[in-house]
Image 1 (cartoon, helix red, strand yellow):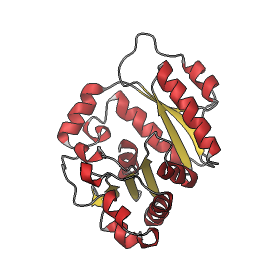
Image 2 (cartoon, one colour; image 1 turned 45 degrees about the vertical axis):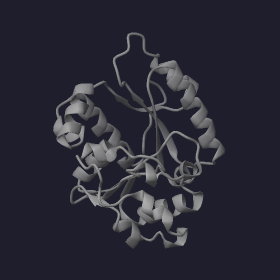
Image 3 (cartoon, rainbow, N blue to C red; image 1 turned 180 degrees about the horizontal axis):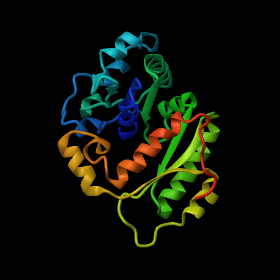
Amino acid sequence: LNVAAVLAGANRDVIAAELRGHYGTLSTHFGRELPPGNLSSLLELPPEGITEFELNTRLTRHSSSLRILFGPQRASEAHSIPAAHAAAIVNSLARMARFVVLDLPAEPVEATREAVRACDFLGLILDREAGCLAAAEIMLDQVRAWGAKALIGCVVVHRTPLACPLDLEQVVQRLHHGIIALIPPAADACVLAQAAGTPVVSSHPDALIADSLNKLAGKPTEEPIVIRKSA
């Protein structure tokens, strides 16, 4: 959400999309309990019926430059996303905006596979603790097995301050990928931003977390994209 908001703030046409078959939480960041449209009804169409027109009717406009495709909002809307539907959604979105920012679940499902194969840039999010690092290793193995061509970088998120976080060099050495962003803990700022119905980069523009998120959003726009090979 914040990466998409930063890109849109630079007058780039952006679509943020929750490509997940279960409840999408992005709507809670805008004070919308039930957005007017979401991904679930697209799954009732055949893949060839998922056109730019159909997608556009389900997008919620947040600003002049940012549109959002929310994930399912009710338990009754939850469905697995078939591979053909995921490919049709991602390919159509790519024709509709300069940047498409996908929120992907960590599960190795068909929809994630198709999305990853279509991506130019993939950020692997993990916290600085052993369980997250082990899960990240498995996910990278899965991504490689899918034949992804995307440039991959690690986004290290500090959800809470840790007394003994993993050493960043250890993260890089085990994952064999560079770190593209370090996101500091900012629980209060995030909660206040959510209550205000706005991304934290907008509600707390001078906070350290906003600076980190701005730098992360700048990565996909670099020519060429540069990823550090060490912490």
